[in-house]
Image (cartoon, rainbow, N blue to C red):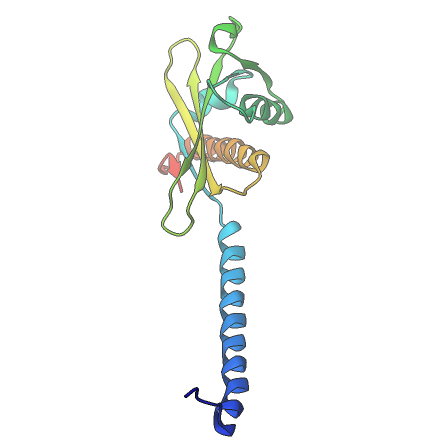
Length: 180
């Protein structure tokens, strides 16, 4: 025989529904707040070996990486030009003979503990004639981040750290060359 709902069962159902709605809204709030916090946490790292040579150079060339669909070489070139530098971009074979600094970049997706995928952009600055490493800048943000903002952060933080290192060396202050 099917059981019919008693008056007590019927009275408890709205309480259950209210509790479920409160729990759902609380969970939704936590998820939205958490994702908003996570998407705005960029990380950068800079290492500078020869600040004077990097800062005194004016002719840069950004080598295009095979398979780059985001045209990062062009974005990096524009960022260097915006800093008042003479910069070109293209395949390694097309590099002009008067290039002083080669900029190489590595763009990849990486898994993170907090966020499923993080985009990492690393710029490497090397002397064109000796292939000697001068500096590197890295920017990492969640996948939805603006690529142009990452390029700006990586280039700007590298030159800011190079300027700081050069000023420290000129004043006799001894500080580590890398910063996090």
